[in-house]
Length: 327
Ligand SMILES: Nc1nc2c(c(=O)[nH]1)N[C@H]1C(S)=C(S)[C@@H](COP(=O)(O)O)O[C@H]1N2
Ligand SMILES: [Mo]
Image (cartoon, rainbow, N blue to C red; front, side, top):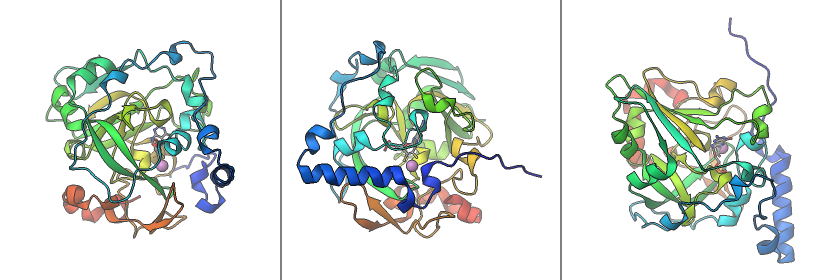
């Protein structure tokens, strides 16, 4: 018999309108707007922690901005950077949206990424060496959280397929598994033992080679911020946001399907595939519409978050998985 572990539910285990941290945040925002103070009050404050390394300037800053790839554009406007910098999901720093100050404690240099598993030669590479090898470009992508809020942003980075080519996986490699850093001395959330740290996500090799699968190293024309997953995170715009793992330290090519962080916690709600689908409700809320973070407008959610043209073919042979493709 399977025994379900009891754990404290994150805010997105509640119906969205009951998530207090979020509604408190939105009220604060409209209050600030009303006072005309948004620029001052919402600006990210200077670093508060005592970690000297964390305060160093990002050595990759001179690489940005990079040229935009016009093949990836949007109909609606980009979500303001300030909103993106102050409304985040990053459970390592707390299970609410206002983790941006806490995340500044994360040291992002030196930052090594291990590439291992079913590859010709496992290796460890520093982020700045990796950045030199990869062709950087900017793309405008949508982002759809499983909690039913959404935004649009200009990511900079490189296609994961380039890294896969560099890694030379063997024919045994069927999945790519990603792991986030683990360090309780900087990430207080990781002291919450009921979560299965470190954060892990995984995709199939086919998904990894898809042109949409993007390794993000920058946003809004500069290095990606710590709260958004510096120095490197994934962007899988046709999947729910939790698949887009932040602050990656290990990329493994593996034979068996890995179990991801949220899947371990609640496999019936946050499955391996997690493709956006308006017709398959989360067990506790509808996915038919989403709330645009900036305007608050409810907009219809699209199948594969609007990226069907690029990714639908990945799943034509998997329709027998039914709802499991979507949750
Ligand atoms: N390591 C790690 N990666 C993560 C998360 C997290 O808690 N830890 N949250 C995920 C979720 S649920 C979402 S919606 C996005 C949020 O990215 P953003 O804060 O840049 O909007 O990051 C994803 N990646
Ligand atoms: Mo999310």
